[in-house]
Each structure stands twice: as structure tokens, then as C-alpha cells.
Length: 317
Ligand SMILES: [Zn+2]
Figure 1 (cartoon, protein in one colour):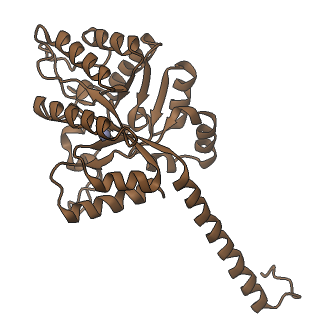
Figure 2 (cartoon, protein in one colour):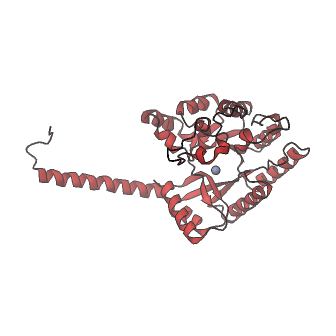
Figure 3 (cartoon, rainbow, N blue to C red):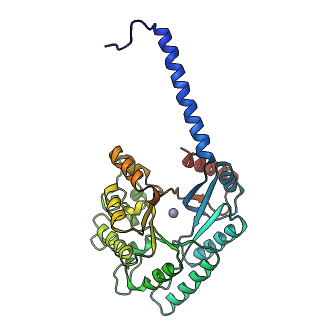
């Protein structure tokens, strides 16, 4: 079957096709230039050292990073992250804003909450725009009773009150994708093919003593609902990556709710294109771009080259 008009010689048709293809490429190129020229924020980055290659990227492609501290590796690491994030913000306010966190060690000891509130206030006074909480709350940290502490525990309420009073934002990476409660994927040759096959500590499949997916999601819903004047940004699509309808429902219910997309693009690609497109158009002011990339202390030159290429490719593709 041919729809080619017999009046157009095939060689001419080929030339026309080539010209059309060139024009498409040219317009893609000019869109890339336009994209580079726009001022953009990556709201989920982890820059742990003053690396000039990162600043080069930010200058070349017109980015500003929100540099996020995470209390995932103990007291010293938390302290170091807060320090370097504050320094980078003070040195290069054009390139970096920062989000602090609080130490989770000693959470059940007397005096813990007072010292957390004091440190957070200090960080807010030093320019932090928000506070990050991580999945260790909900999935890892156990109360003296053995129960896994959830985000809606009354212990955290004074923190939410402080964030609200100070007009800051809670950035929350709570839970994991729903896949963490499903079997891990290992090939017949024993090759792990998903994150939980190599990180079994976060695979909760067939572990009845661990919190369920809905335990974690409903605790976060409670915090969003009970603190309507606190801005809540769900990192990684708020671990509701499997269906934008779940996010849309919360966008409608909670005006203080927004999300960040870091590391979850593939889940959007699995869903119906029109549905995802409509979601992005409708809630465009509440969906933030994030990559979860950054720089670690003590990187080698080959690591810097590799990381720069990765950030550039992720940021403008
Ligand atoms: Zn992260």
C-alpha cells in the first residue's frame, strides 16, 4: 500500500523528507537553547562538597539547587551536612538554597525535642528554607515498645508547629514505592534486577512484623491534613508513584500538598500518556523537578567527569 502521490518523484520525496527531518532537529536544538536560558530549580540535590564542576553546571545551564540534608547516617554525618549546606548557601546564594534536617539519634530520650527545635531555629535563621524527613521514620526507627514510629506520632508535633510558625516547608521522603511490598526481582541466573533485590532491608514483602504500605501513607496523610498551614512536599512523588490519580486526589484534598519527581520518572512513563499529561498541566504549580543528584566529599577526577555528564544529561534531556 502506497499513499505517495504518483506526481511526486521518489527522489524529490526523499529530499523533502530530509528537509523536514532537519527542520525538526533544528527546532529541538532551539528548544534546548531555550531550556538552557530559563532559570530552573532542582529541588532535590545533595551537594556535600564545594565542587567547582557543580557550580559550572549551574552557571552553564542556569540552575539553582536546593541542597537537601538527610539524617540517614548518624549524628556526625547530619552535622557535617548541615554545616556544608549552610556554607555553600552563604558563599554562593545564586547557586544554592538549603533544606536542613534533624538528628534522629536519641529520639526517645528526655531533652531530644528541645535540642532539635533549637537547632532547627538556628538553621532557619541561617537561611534554611525547609526541613527534610527520611524513610527511617516509618520504616526503621522503633519506639521502646517495639512499634515502628510513624510521621504522625505526637513526638514530632512541636517540629511541625515550628515549621508552620516560621513559614518553612517540610520535604518528606516517606516510605518506598509500592514495589517494596512486592517480591523482589532476581533473574534465573541470580542477577538482582530491582533496588530491593540489592537493598533487602527496605523490602517489606512477606514481612508481617514490618509496617504496611498503607500504615506509612496514612500517617503522612494525617500530618498533611492536621497541619494545613504547613507546606508539605512529598519527595519521590510522595511514594504514590504508581498512579497520578492518587496524587491528584491529595492535591484536591490538601492545598498545602505538593510533590517532587526525583527518581520516579519511569513510573510516570508506565501510566497512560494523556492521564499523566493532564495531571502535569492541571497541577503544574505543585509538581517540582528534582534529580536526587549532587556531589560527595573526596571525589576523584574521573568521578567528577562521570558525575558532571550524568547531571547534564539528566537535567536537560
Ligand atoms: Zn535524596
